[in-house]
Image (cartoon, rainbow, N blue to C red; front, side, top):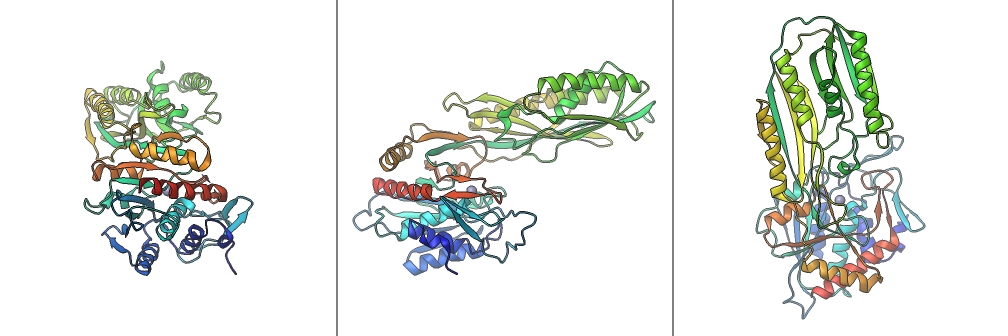
Length: 478
Ligand SMILES: [Zn+2]
């Protein structure tokens, strides 16, 4: 059966996408996709190089007469997120992605499509092969394992690339050019806990759940509640005597915590329940626009040795005092969060408690300043603070030369003005930019919806405009 993709334009781009979608390439299983790229290079007599992480660079000579133009890096990632609908029988390790064309949209059939970033890969291969595309020397950079933690980009060694202008082809809104991303780094505070034996009264388990959570970068500006901090706040203000056994919430460093559980003991069960409920009603009112499903439950708990009063007070103060949410908005790019912190995970053990936070910023010094604040709060509480290694920011540069070129060529090709943006999460450009000093970078792509889900689709008309824009940009730079 011939593929419905082979009738689409631009032909070369869809030819490559059609081949790539038949190659299994879940994150960390990119060998076959890498081989496709290396074979492509061999066929055309292009030099290619693979590093230990599996990243590949293909060097494409300039169109005759354009040899002196600057080297342009075209970059995309080989891997895809492998997700399917639960009722779909599909083996990502062996089966080709099934594709459907419906009107202007290409989708898969119950699985992710892999247009993220298959269209970017196909565009760079097409540009290298397309006789009508005029360009200077190109380096096609294919990275591995972007989706689980930018691991391919992390493994690139200095010297792998010669070019100092890079077009990252991994964006998802046509006409929106990304020129920056956040760097991030985590910190963990550990506090010693002293417990008294026994404790008196009845044990209760207080659960705060039903919050929306979300990505700690992309969703941090939405004002969603942090379940850990809200429950700690309720307990911190409580005017009924109680002992604290544990407070636990959050599971991932990059997710806003959705649920938190406290184990307490008290002699005044009904008063405590009423006081907690009252606090909860205030919080529910405060968050009524964003947290419609927030839920409090108080059940019978299990008796255990509670923290002594000192430990309890210090621990709750620490959790309440740690920053959460947006710290600063960008002063240059409207709507961009510059710096934020996510109080991600809190755990209590027999003799210690830990609080884990995840900081992001597009400006490294601002990231460090926030970690300094966390450090200070941790130390004021008498705890020890460990700062874990992070990943670099890509600081937006509104004066970037490549941005000027892309804006102009986009206007020429589509008649429309481009929008300039940055995101509050990590991108491969952040890591690559740190390794190759002076790299002028930009990220763009066609309209692509719902990446990482079986509803992923890509606009055919937008892919064509994206490719024409890429060609026009390469010609302009040559
Ligand atoms: Zn991607």
